[in-house]
Length: 248
Image: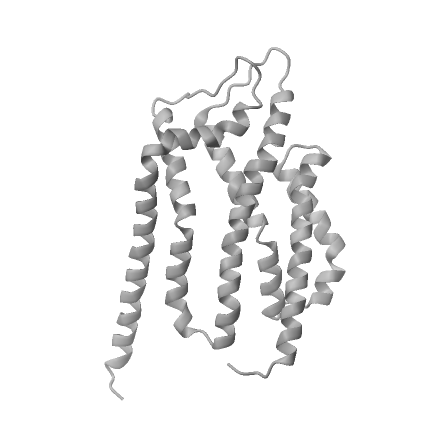
């Protein structure tokens, strides 16, 4: 065996990884360049759920000198990352797929696509269902004589945090399937743990939303439903695996 073969193989993998990373970064940069001319209108759309809940005469403000520019720019940058995520995940998949078995490929690709779609759904759910409730509560909770005027940078940081939180929360079915298929836990154990998981879901909803049961339920109930979806998918995969021969 040629002793130089392993270093060449490692170098080839490193070169391929570099190429994949460069393509992923290029996709993000292209999206950002395409979105930059629309930075202000896009930020206006992002701010709409808050603007609609503000009392008459109130508006958003910028307390920093560069905030009117940096807030839309930062939002466009993060939006470019989210929009380019399919390309980024495709590059990741193209890099790791050759080292997977046929069964692993058949499972990994649908999970990857599902994770991406669920993350987008979580963000959309936060924007259309959660933001109006949260900002309406905050606006109505202001003491008498206090004019609600939110800083553009603070608002951006807040909504980006919620986007990430709800995007991750909607990954519950993927996590459930991975736990079951990976052999870490079985479906019966998860079913017995359902009451505890419901409590955890409401605790998460309490932390991420205003302190009223309706707002908490807005996040907790979808998480519980997604948990049940994950159980159904995991149970179906386990049954199918039991009926198939153990081939790579």
